[in-house]
Length: 130
Ligand SMILES: [Zn+2]
Image (cartoon, rainbow, N blue to C red):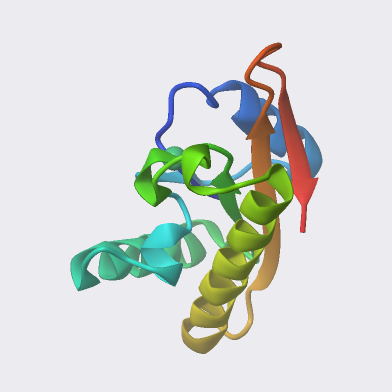
């Protein structure tokens, strides 16, 4: 599981994700899958890839769940988008980019993509599998 560090989402999103996908090793990095799709520097991407490699080696991980979330500060937050649809579409593209990086390095892994949203009023967390 690759997740952002954002306290507004965890642990509630993690328990929803565990309900949906079962147990997982957790790689929490600011920006979540951004570290694979659009890393701010090469080291971030290498750190993510090394942790994925270890999860496979040590715990036999067969599936990776790539997550991004709404209003992610690492991407500049929701304010950079004119609508929620535009934000979701953007993150879908990012998750697809991350997926192609994973494919290249770990061709046998199954890959799931999830966008996690938080209603700003009710603070309810929801998962959107893409
Ligand atoms: Zn974030």
